[in-house]
Structures are given as structure tokens and as C-alpha cells.
Length: 207
Length: 98
Image (cartoon, each protein chain N blue to C red):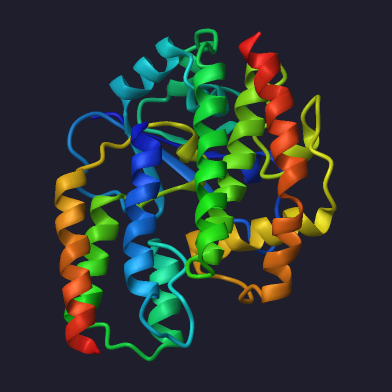
């Protein structure tokens, strides 16, 4: 069966720092017997076709930011899929990530336990909210810094995004210095600004 | 609630269970990197029942094999009843430890 390997994400944007990892995609047909899923995101060719047909953000991400590394049949599979369908789930996705932010904030307000994980989820909610909004607007930004780079950027100190990003890297990769109580407070103080920004953009998406 | 939010909630529940016990450093996530860091920071025996339950839950939630960019999608299926059963087992393993 044919296999196609790609790099995607930050390395294709040249957005590399010490905490960056390299995102690798394997497109296969049939069972995966030998590809390490800790290193590769493994997708069936058919599943990718359906993501393209539904205009899924991940399809757009791959379409715009992936590079072929290996093809067993000489075909660039992702290129052969063409342009994904129009993105239609902007409202639903923005609501989903706004909810992730608010649920995580709710937990952070109740207890200091899991503070790093909850800040990590607040980062994820904020980043993915911005990415989905940008895709809905037709100017997609998939960067980790998407909240600062989209058409209507989030206005917070860079220190805040640094703390949230560190929480994310601690949670997903176990790398970096633990967050201090003061850093948790810095992130918490930015919450009203983030909530107001999300509310403004959600109102726009809802029309 | 969406599948995506369900997976995060399941992860949060497990972490809350683990981190409610006293540790030198919290478990920050269910990724393999976060679990490895936690084992090292707290000098925990990798062959313990607690660790094997955590790894099993992490595997079911696909956090060991997860790539952050994909979290934009709702690609994975949450086997919620299996994971909540494991969360209860983790709670019991922690009680036996303390």
C-alpha cells in the first residue's frame, strides 16, 4: 500500500524555538503496523479525503502548511486533494474553544491544583479560537502565536502569552521550568482582556 | 459537550485525582513527556500499578500519541466509560499508596 510522509506546522513556517517540536504526518491505507504514533500523526488516506470534503481546519492546515518528505508512488497525495471545501464550522468551533477557555478558568478559580494544566487548556482555547476565527475570516493563521497575529489581535502583554505557552509545553511535552505562583497570577490578571476579545470576535462570527 | 471538550474534561478529572495527593511536583498532563517528568521529579517507580493505570488511560485518550496541532480537529473518539473506570482505579491505587 502507498505511504506518504509530510512535515507540517511550525517547521514549515520557519517558526522554530527551543520548545518547538517537529510535526510529522503519515498518510496510509490499511492497518498501521510499523509507524510510531508517538512521532507521527497517522491518518488514513480516506479520512483525509473526508476532512477535505468537510473543509475541516486540519485539512486547511495541511493544505497551507505541509511539505512532502516521502512518497512511495511519486504522488504528492495532499497536493492531489486540491483545495479543501469552504470552512463552515467557524461559529461552532469558536464557541467550542471559548468554552474550553471558560471551563478551564472556572477550575483555576476554584483550586490551585492542576493550575498548570488549566493554564495549558486556556492557552489551547485561546490559540485555537484565534486560528478558527482567522480561518472563518479567510486569512488563516496556524501559528502558536495566532492570537497576536490575526486581523483582530488579542492585546495582552507578551509575558502573559509566554506564561500560557510555557504551561502548554509543560503539559504536552513535560519541558521547561515549573510556573511560579506569581506567574499564575500574571496569567489570571489577563483573563478579562481575553474574555472581552473572545466576546467581540464571537459576536462577529455569529453575525 | 463536544468530543474534544469531553477528552479534556476526562484528562482534567484524572489529573485532579492524581494531583490531589501530595507530590514534589504536579503531573502537568497526560502526554508521555509530562508523565516521564512527573516520574522523575517524584522518584516514582515506573513499574507501579499507578503508573501502568496512568499510561493506559493516557493511551485511551490518545494523549501519548497526540500532536498539538491536531487538537483543532475532533479526530479522535473518546471511550468515556473505559476512561472513567480507569480514573476510579487510579483513585484506589492512590488511596492504597497513602
